[in-house]
Amino acid sequence: MEIFQNRRLLIVRKFILVTTIFLVGAVGFFGCGSAQKTEKARIYPASDFTDNGDGTVTDNNTGLMWQQEDDDTRRNLNSAEIYCENLSHGGYSGWRLPDFSELKFIVDLNQSNPCIDSTAFPNTNPSIFWSSYIDHERDPSSAWYVNFYNGNSNRIKKSTSQYVRCVRDGQ
Image 1 (cartoon, rainbow, N blue to C red):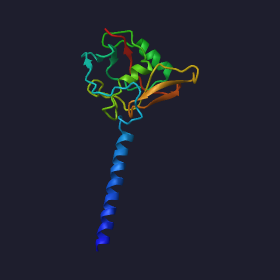
Image 2 (image 1 turned 90 degrees about the horizontal axis):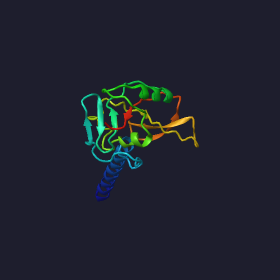
Image 3 (image 1 turned 45 degrees about the horizontal axis):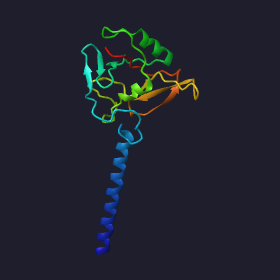
């Protein structure tokens, strides 16, 4: 009888251990805060934004002004650059496609799906957004992106269609 109880206790403990490992692993895999995302991303609450009340948001740390919501349109890289250059938004011109580090910096690892402060940036598509960075030596046919679903980043062909969030230098 005692052997049976010890065996059952051992099975229960193994079940709890396996379940815990799975759940912790699932959160780390699917959440924005996994250890693999250590590049220049926001790892603190992103309360450092000012809603300007005109469809723009200012990052109080960098002074950059961001388009608060993307226009829900996917574009190839060339079209994305043209879109930002021609954008007149919130009474401002001078918009551009963000460079990789600027875009990566608005990732909020405390958030998930999308990995961004949804108060400052409502309705963000949990998807890939273009950056202007092209590594001409390694792959001139690709540009770097940031995926706001999981905070990851990589290169993708410039001909693919992705979302755009434009930025401009301060006031």
